[in-house]
Length: 94
Image 1: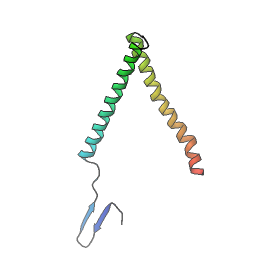
Image 2: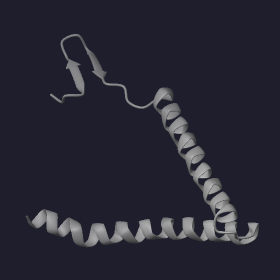
Image 3: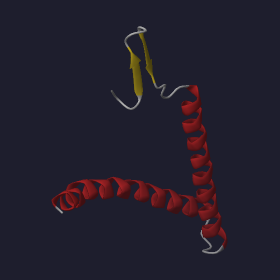
Image 4: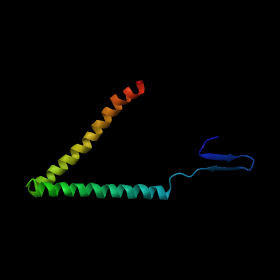
């Protein structure tokens, strides 16, 4: 008998734990929205920093921020590849 299901064959009914649904989907959508709000706020803060402190013009400040964010996203793919290729083997060997 599995931990997430209960069967009663003498009564003829079967019960399985409910997963997912509208509530879980809304939780994921809200958390994704909050993540994007924080992401955009950080981008705006970086542009304002480059404008005010570093004295870039607006075009250079926004280009620098988009290049930085794009590089950060691409490096996560590279880091995931390195982690899956090399670090997983070392953990499994130990």
